[in-house]
Length: 388
Image (cartoon, rainbow, N blue to C red; front, side, top):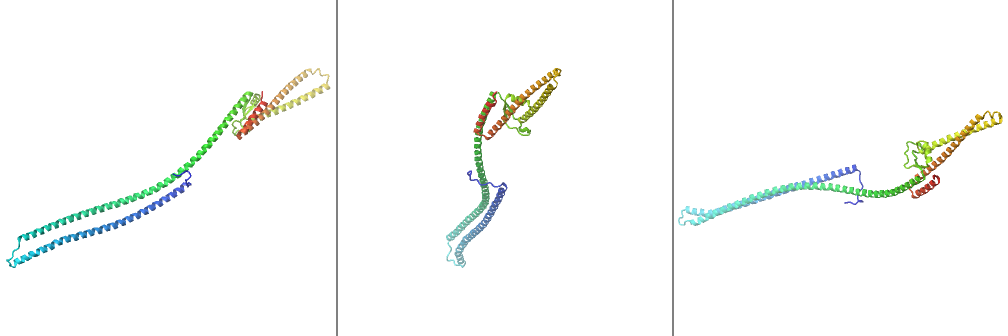
């Protein structure tokens, strides 16, 4: 199998399929050409073998005929030879020579030899014909076996070509599978490296999370110790569509929290603007009251200098003026107290906003030294400004 680094570059699917189809068609054409050439060679060999067998069969038939003729020609010559003395004897007998007679035992032995020779000839001829028949049968059987062998050879050749074609296809499949396995090995190595990086990142984030949890616990302890209140910032800058910042909070005293609650619901900057507007209104009212008080004083000073006789007549109105002045002074003092308190709350809220912004920057920086500096600064700030 191939190693992870031995895989070839992957080609596009369409080009790869077209190249594979073209290669398969070329292989099929070459296989068909080889098969046709082999079939033609086999047909030519078959014709040559058949002609050779026919020639051998003709030679065997000619030899058998010659042998048969020779066998049949020999008894005829012996018969002619044996018939010659008989004819001579008969001619001698017919000539009237009665002096010499033919020996009957000799003629009988000759006839017996002739018949024995004929029987031998018939036996040889029968054995020859039987052998010739068996030879023809064996030749036919061999020819049939040869034809079957040629057919089976052609079938085996076809099967061989098909198997060779299938082997080529399987080689291509194996090569493709090796490339896929090499690609899988590379992907596995990349995924393993990515997993190790993710594990390291997860461990670092877990450590930071533990530190943040510890910081939150210390923050809650400090807030609870100093009796402070946590107020969420809400939507920044009054933008309703803006997503709220997670963890954006403000730590204020209880009095400041009550003042912010009196300012209504909404983001912290909106409530601060609302308190600033109320402060401006209170300042304008104080200025108006001061102006009215100054005008009343001027009136009273003028009335005291020009009409001393009517002082006793205006005792009732003086009492009313004193009451009004006292109420005005009381309202002025209340407004001054509220104004100073609102200024103090606004200053505190602005400082808290700056601290929250600094803490948010420290969290983004993900730096331990900034986080430690923020904790120290927050503790010092709380001890300085929020001790009740």
